[in-house]
Image 1 (tube, rainbow, N blue to C red):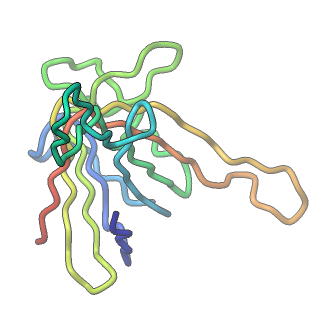
Image 2 (cartoon, rainbow, N blue to C red):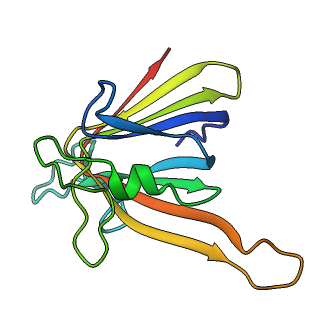
Length: 163
């Protein structure tokens, strides 16, 4: 696997579509990353055969993308008030005390280490927010509000395009 380094995450768009008003730009980004994951921890397995012929190849296990978004604070507008499912005005990325809604538009705009501009677009209708962690501290000389980390899962594909 190639470890991609980036210089800056310009923004992450979250909502239900690409048009103005259909998504919110998240700009207070400390870090962003994604990786392929598999339910059983293995992305591929050897192909098992019951005869003497051993074909070369592998079986690709079910996999998904896990995205981690770290913000310097929470982003209430984008994650708690922005409509995220097309046709469902009351849909939200994060719901208090309920299951989170499906996110139909999730796009990250990144400036790579070499200056190349890249867009990561995650498959429509297959993204959910699965975790939110706030870092707080009451220690002397430390900020009370730290970072907020959000973990998303995409049960589909990701398209990487330079721009």
